[in-house]
Length: 329
Ligand code: ADP
Image (tube, rainbow, N blue to C red):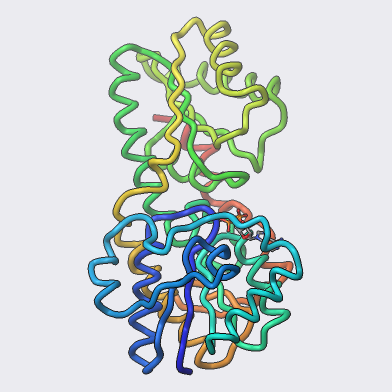
């Protein structure tokens, strides 16, 4: 192989830079040139790229964000645009493409693979950790760390004023960040898209949980973690109902995009480095339409098919802990 291309697409995640660096260094080590397409699939459609080498990727390991920029690209859903992307890759003799992104980006990668005969390899880069076939995704650990640090701080102020805090964390339609940050920060309750039933039922569950908690301790402060966009009508509706029913002051905190930023924690740096390097190995082996994944701590080639493009289920043991442990303490 003589030339490898890489791009970052969809929701950005800490560790994408570390992954670009790994792809670049691994490619150089096998004697290949490397280019980086800018703005996700948009760069591929406009033939807009930059050359990458060991100097460009210096000190990228610890830098948040992505030097290639990420973006959505609605146009890429049209078949003629996918053909154009394949033509652009051919025009400049690319031997393999690495797509760092989430499940949407992988859907695009799969379609591109269907019309291009060189390898397209996906690397799971998303804070949501919602991709089937890989134990973890690049960015997930850092997002959890950010959420946990915020939850710890919120607890201090919640306790001082004996308030209820409803903390909104990211995750799109997946509850991974909410579930595991809630457990890691010892939150009182967590609301997940995977188990959400209705506002009325969930409100009963929350009040019941808070009641039980209050019997165990004097302080009236509580922390409730919720996945973004989950409560019908928005969090103000939940806050108003909670305040009315409990008589305790309720505050809302939306963590938002801070969860996508910052220097990646070591788990994401290591994962990004392993998966980026393995993606280049897969291209060398002429493996097509694969995800460079991590499975039981080892790199694994997982086909990008309908099975892997479904949302990963939550960890059953974490769910058990959520239900049992949060009633104590
Ligand atoms: P993520 O990769 O983080 O899941 P999105 O779902 O927004 O983010 O997808 C990122 C990009 O991947 C889209 O803007 C589009 O360019 C491409 N993409 C998503 N779904 C498809 C699809 N079904 N067909 C082709 N391209 C797609």
